Amino acid sequence: MTAAPYSVAALTALIRDAVAARPELEDVLVEGEISNISFPASGHVYFTLKDPHAALSCVAFRTNASRIPFRPGNGMTVIAHGHVDIFDQQGRYQLYVDRLEPSGTGALALAVEQLKRKLSEAGLFDDRLKRGLPLLPRRVAVVTSRSGAALRDVVTVVGRRAPCVDVILSPATVQGDGAVDTLVTALRRADGVRGADVILLVRGGGSIEDLMPFNSEALARAIRATRLPVVSGIGHETDTTVADLAADRRAATPSAAAELVVPSVVALRQDLTARGLRLGNAVSRDIDVKRAATDRSAARLARLSPAHRVATMRQDVDLHAALLRHALLSGVHRKRRRLDDATARLRLQSPTQRLALARAELRHASDRIRVSMLATVRSSAAGLDARRARLEALSPQRTLQRGYSITVDDASGSVVMSVSAVRPGSRLRTLVSDGHVRSDVVDVDPRSERGDDTASEQMYDGNPTHDD
Image (cartoon, rainbow, N blue to C red; front, side, top):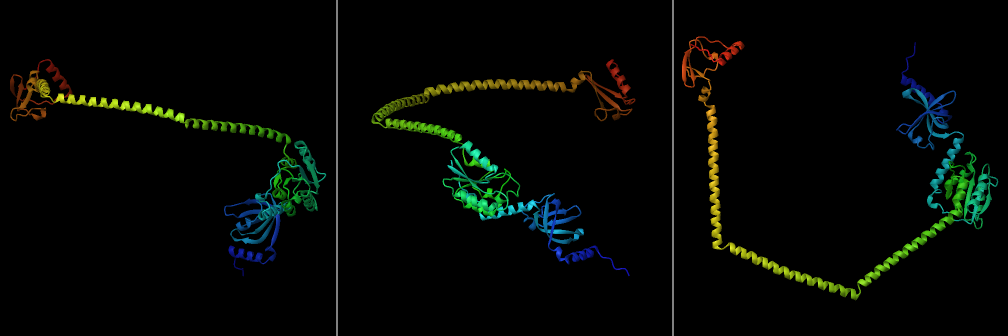
């Protein structure tokens, strides 16, 4: 008998149990090239590890992804650690990654980044611990290889910028096995050089493997333990080692480190000359300011002298005398104006004056009344004439005098306005300007367009038609 078919979920669960039964799949290290990587908003990282023969789906959940010390990208070769399990929704197996490291050279870079993070948390890179550099050192101790180009670059730059500065070499091996120990020893030896003011830790460029001695914790702690400030100039401008971060100042190259430590004597002389000029100008300006302040104090003292005060008081007396004289004259003029106003008001209150004014006002009022009455009469007469003319123009008698007539029904007395208001046999009465005519209707003929023209022509010819 055929066995019952599995559901998709049941078969997937069976496969998942089979995978879970393999303990070696719980702790897996897989090396491969990253492809199809994506960083969704959830914080998870999805990618595929592949080699020439196979591909493996991988996922690093947000918590594990946040602990990856670098940003993975397509094309990078990495070593992933995690466990294998089945993703039910898509029916495929995938690697659940909890740790990711670059392979080969990337492992060195990862180790350097981890050391940088450790020493930074320990406070070795704190800017508050950085020591200042001397303005013009008398002696510079250089820690580098005896045969390297870095030493020649430093000696050349110092000789060009400040020939008076001594350069003392503290030789060390700058790459390979045992280089860290020789660098630490040379650094301590340079720190003990008599008369030295600063230490240069330099070497030329190289690969990350070549620069690994400068990425050691022992060297970083030795740098922070010196009594003299340390300036690093290691590799190229893009290289930043642990020693660079621990040093008091970092330069991009050995030559740049020498320029940073030893100023140009020519530039110092120019700066000294400029400072002397600025100092002289400042002293001159200060003297001018103090001289101006002295002049202002002398002027204030002159204004406070008794002679100046007496002259000022005399001027005040003259001013007050002028003000008093002006006030007296203003009072006299004011009282004179008041007297003149009172006299004028008294004159206006005289009976003779008031009677003359009343008579003049009476005559003026009488003239205004007479003029107003004449204007009113003329206006009323003009209005009456205009109304009489309009009434005469609208009078029926005037209309009849112009040759028109009015026809009314003799029985009812109503005006005939249309032929439909009369019938044959009706008696009509026609009013003209000098009387009326009675007539009997013989026939009623409603006017057509042609009949209207004929009637008009007959009326204009002076031959009106008659009903009788």
